Each structure stands twice: as C-alpha cells, then as structure tokens.
Image (cartoon, rainbow, N blue to C red):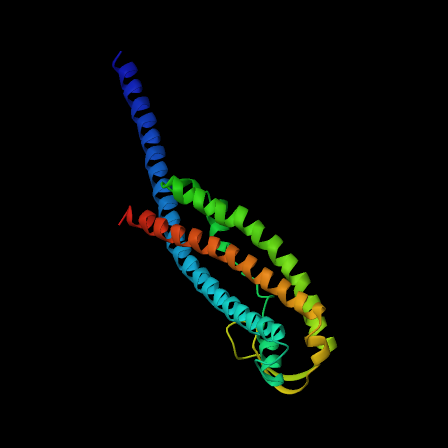
Length: 236
C-alpha cells in the first residue's frame, strides 16, 4: 500500500513539475511576445514621425506649386502683363505635381507577421493602423498613378512648346534634386492658348486633390502617433 501511495505521489510530482514547466514557458513566451510588441511600437513611433515629416515636405511643395499655377493663370488672364517671360518660365519649372508619398510600412508588416498586432490593447490604434496601411494606402496608390500619368503629359507639353534648358543638381532638394534654368525660348502664342490654360487648370486640380489626400493621411498619422505613445506607456 505504501508503495502504491508512493507511486501516486511521485507521479503527481512529475506531472505537477511538467505542468509547472509548461506554465513557466508559457509565461516566458508571453513576456517575450510582449517585449517584441513594445519594441515594435517604439519603432512604429519613429516610422510615423518620419512619415509625418515626409507628408509635410510634400505638402510644402504642392503649396508652392499651386502658388506658381495661380500666378501663371492670373498672368494669362491679363494677357501676360503681370510677369516677365523669364519669370513665367521659372514658375512653370517650379510646378511639381508628380511627387508621391511613399509610406514606410515595414514595421506595420512586422507587427502583423509576428502576431504582435493582436497584442495591441488599444482597439482604436489597431483600427487606425489598418485604415492607414490598407484603405488610405490603396487610395494613395490609385491617386498617385493617375497624377503620374498626367505629369508625364504635363512635362511633355512644356518641353514640346517651350525651349527650356536647365542644369540638374541631384544632391540638392529634399527628394529628387533641383533644377536651374540656363536657357529658354518663351512661346507666347502657346502660353496664351486655351490648351496651356487648361493644362494649368488640370494641374491645379490634381494639386488640390492630392493635398486633400495628404491632409487625411496626416490627420490619421497624428492620431496613430498619439495612440502609439499611449500604448507604449501602458507598460512603462
């Protein structure tokens, strides 16, 4: 009988130790997963701040482009009496409608692939990130493609109707470098033509359309930044 009880005790001890080791291992895994999630949230905060800076830079470029477009349209309305030929060429060259926002989605993808996304406690943050890296991302891609196609046509029109020569400094500027005009031949008849006026109006429309999208993205990113900081501070 004593042997029987002894065997039961030994079996219970073995089973208990095995279950306890499983419990400890489970706690360790949960702790490791939580540490990984928190580390990724910190990386996400850095990424969001970088993307917000990129959004600001593109919005600044679009704002200056719209200013140039409006100056040109106003000058055309006044039959080219408001600015000089050189100023008109400079303003034409300053119009940028082909800049696109390229979000950094690597950390978000890592949150998904590692399962860390499901460990985020703030549901609003999860919904916000899904909105940014799914719906708004697709909207940005679709809009950018449409504007890129127009930008090709826009540049072709300018190069075909104005003899413009410039130098290009690939190390200057925040994105793709900068141009400096060195020679041009102003085509006044084309400048005052309805076709060019229409091209400028279309460029303005795309500037406004993309600016609106960038503002929507900026608002979502700012919300994501605030919520990510809150998520990070839960365990601090």
